[in-house]
Amino acid sequence: MICVSILPETEEEAKDLIIRASGVAKAVELRIDRLKFPNLELLRKFCTGYLVVTNRRREDGGYFDGTEEERIESLKEAVISGADYVDVELGSDHKHIDGLRELIDREGNRTRLIISHHDLSGTPPLNEMKNIYSMCRSLGADVVKIVTNAHSVADSLRVLNLITWAHEAGEEIIAYAMGKAGVISRVMAILLGGHLNYVYLDGEYSTGTGQLSLTEMIKILEMVGRE
Image 1 (cartoon, rainbow, N blue to C red):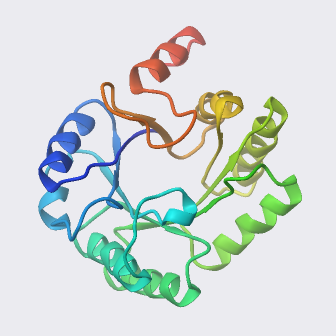
Image 2: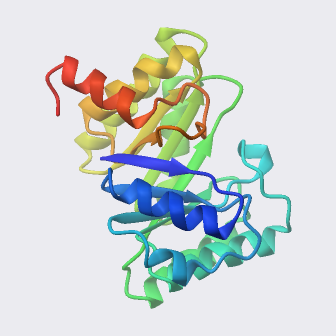
């Protein structure tokens, strides 16, 4: 499923981008790392599709500069506000991940927990990535997200192996590589059935290196016979 990722700086911008993005894609990732105390209950009402809420730390390539407690609290507010997904990093304190999982359970599991791992330096060996995947699952992830940095096409192909491996176990996964060499993995992840595939809204900025715009992704999929 294609997911338009947006990274607004103000609540008004967030509202406008959510409306635009949900009008052209089934899912929207609202990155709140640049927002200060957003009204997530209000913003949720403007999304007509699936809403993913992410508050990315600087060490994971994001912009959030508050305390860890504040960051996790914002994700808990997203759960209470009815977000379809919240995304938290594997490197977060596990007590915070446990707290999110417990809240999601109390709220009737209407929100799915994405536990993500971003390797900004490279693409580890496949067995290492499988171990990371297992760690995410053991912490209660509904969907695991593993993103690496590709220095070669071989790196892209290696991370894509995770998709078929997870599907053999009947589990959903988000897996692709960043960087110029990772562009192919973003397209192939859709063809292989990656759960969410991130693009940026036309006319806006990308939220990750090597990310394609929605129009670019659609054109590529049309060329390979996938609508």
